Length: 175
Image 1 (cartoon, helix red, strand yellow):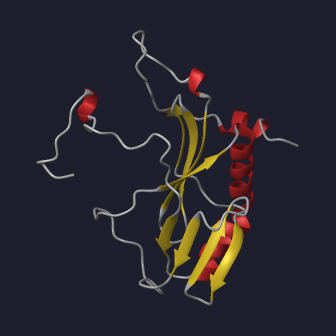
Image 2 (cartoon, rainbow, N blue to C red):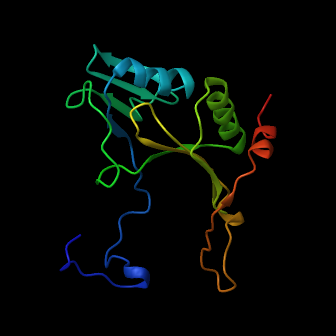
């Protein structure tokens, strides 16, 4: 957005907002080693490999969609993560449909020995934060039903960040 872009409304809302049904469809990540990336996203998190192009690219999904995540080495084979203090992707966020599904993801991470960098309750959601093998930030989260979101007395959204109880989360796993 340029400084000449006109905005109006609360918190600089655009004069003509995007359609509310718009969603982020997929993300492509530059990775140094395709097999290492697949070992994380497919073997640990459980995404399904939809198509692979040798050592250059792979497309993975949940539930048979053509792809939610593209992994490629087109510009990054053997590369290193960007150094701190540079611009780029902060994290990708993977939305789980239920708290039990997020608990299963936590269990998978623990079994694979993948460390968490954070775990937060934001009122609207519960989230786990970690890095993939290429240093890309990854958020795994589930959204609470909208009617449970914290609100101010005048009805405005009031998100927060509190420590997430991981033992309680794990206890919600479906058998």
